Length: 181
Image 1 (cartoon, rainbow, N blue to C red):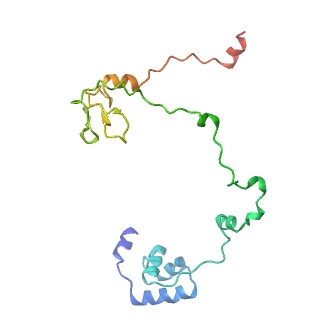
Image 2 (cartoon, rainbow, N blue to C red):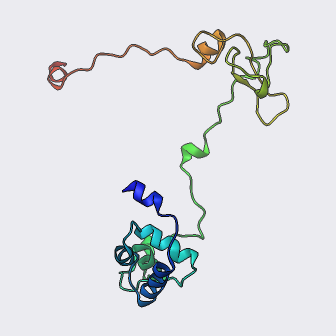
Image 3 (cartoon, rainbow, N blue to C red):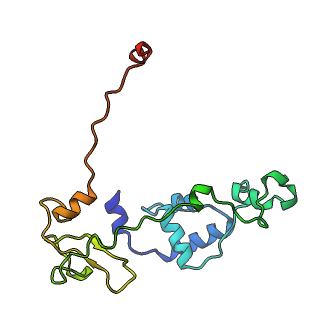
């Protein structure tokens, strides 16, 4: 079937005439493809219609989509409780308002020697890729020390980046919890 489609490279004048006639009468692309046969698919018919710049058609027999139905609802038909209030500023939760951004201790990486420091373009798999400072500032750099085996950071930065998992308490079954006073 695939090979038959590949062999078919051009449309004959008779097929184009039949396509134009059937398209103008309102036949679907699938119907036209079946009538033409010879390995012509529905998609091939639609592509040819587009290349021939035949007028498109809208199908009015379909029900309106949900999006169209939503747009058709009048603003006045929406209950007051469901309307978005644009006059009131949005209130954020208190924990968001009072949150303090985490800022790493700027002096923690001050001991990185200037010779060891790397820019983004100087990074490789053999050097530590720990970012130091604010990327928006010109004094931003990467650590550049030799990496810890199998990690992207040096030993010092691995200790800061990876927290060891704390041993967890064994989970008690419901029956075991009931026996605890």
